[in-house]
Structures are given as structure tokens and as C-alpha cells.
Image (cartoon, rainbow, N blue to C red; front, side, top):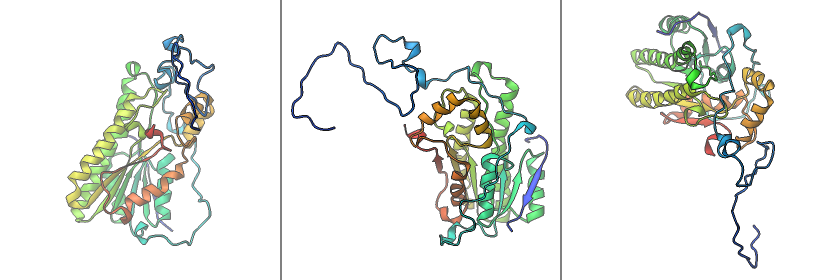
Length: 320
């Protein structure tokens, strides 16, 4: 059973073609690479450049990039999402509503979890935010006691740290796996059991990461990448295993999102920000609210025939 300290917050909804070509045999041929953001201090397009300074160096990890998850009291505060235009009255498909549904969001106190909780609330759901819980069973019992049931689950609890793999602290590794993977597994199975006992359908959204499909650079984060790959495969496996019960399981895999914590890190490391954004085809990082529509879609009946899917919201990062 996953253990830590306890807090439960419960909220209710209130070429131009040449005419002639001269063929000249060069002594060597170099294909230039241009980027919207200059990634290196000088142009190195000659074949005499040392390998350590050029060949493959910008697609490798850098063990000097280190980051350890700050403690709870050192975490920056995320802003509450206030919407872009207030309450709207434009028509939309009724299948997107979450009216009358109870949604549990783990890791809902900050970051993407907080924003997704707000999306569910704005879509009509009653939302239980779970963060740093004592045990899955007791916390789930508290939620059911307050709301009478649980219909949907969003597993957003997770964190990443950057250490060279051969120097990764064992205690930090165990904690990361416990939160990022084990917690997802325990919550999913507990909610699935509840839904099966009620003989009712439900939907789960597991928050993975593009890191579960690619290797991020330059920061080393092998355990996090492996944990998110495991979450993606877990969702696929459970989607098949629980299809008979009408329980859908999908994944949202965000790319680089500008949460309060990420913004703080990048403010202190402008070069890392330039490196990251130079690798994103749309040229910018995502905002937390870019996840809102996706989570409502995957929880609602609008995606009734979607299960085992991995929805990547990464600005095209994993396409290149």
C-alpha cells in the first residue's frame, strides 16, 4: 500500500528549378543544419570538427543537469485557472458533459492535476482532490462517504528528478517509482473494483508523458522515462482487461508544460529553456490549460468508443 502523509480536499460543483546544372565533384560534402534557435556558439560545418564538440552532442544527455524535487513547503504556487472569457453560452455536444459524475483526481493540489480538476468542475462534475494520501483504501472510502460514489479517475500524482543514472540516489528512485507508477496502479485497481461492485461503467485517465515514448535531452532522467512508459503500458493492459466491465482507460502524455514549478526552474536556467523550445515544432511550451479539453473528452461519453489510447499533447515534439 502506498503510504505518506494525508490530505483530502473535496470540492462540489456550484526551389526554384534551374535551367542548367553544373556538376562539380567536391572534396567533401556537408549538409548544413539550420535551427530557429542557435544551439551552439559557432558554426561547425567543417569535417575537421572534433566529435565531442559536434557529432551527436546535442541529442545526448548531460549529467551536469541536476534537479531534485523540492519539498512540499518549497513548491511554488500554481495559479487558479480563471478561463479566457468567463462563463460561456455557446453550444457544444451534450456528450461532453460530466453532470452528475464524481471524479477523483490524484495529485490535484497543484500543476496539471489542479487545472484538470478545474476542467472537470467547469464541466459539471463533483471533484475530489487527493494529494499525499495515507492509503488508497481509506481515502477512497472517505470520498465515497462524502459523494456516495466514484465514476471517474484521473491519476496525475507524479514528479521527475534529474540525476545521472549511475549516481541516482536509491531512496529517490524508490520514491519516484512509488508515486509515479505504484500510486497509479493502486488507485486504478481500487476504483475499478468499486465500479465493478456497482456494476456501472467508468473512465480513467492516466497522466503519462512524452518521456514514456522518447528520451528527453539534455537532462538525464532514465527512471522517470521508464516509469511513464510503464504507465502507458499499464493503461493499455487495463483497457483490455476491464473492457468487459465497461471501464475505459486512456493516457494523456503531455510534453513540456509551463507549470509554476517548471517556470521557476527555467527562470533560473535560460539556456535549458532555449534548448527545450528549439526542439518543439510549434516553438513554445504548452500551458497547463492546454490539457483541459483533453481530460474532459476522455472522461466523458464523447469518447465512449475510445480506450487504450495515448493522447500526446506535446506541440509536435515526438514527431521529429
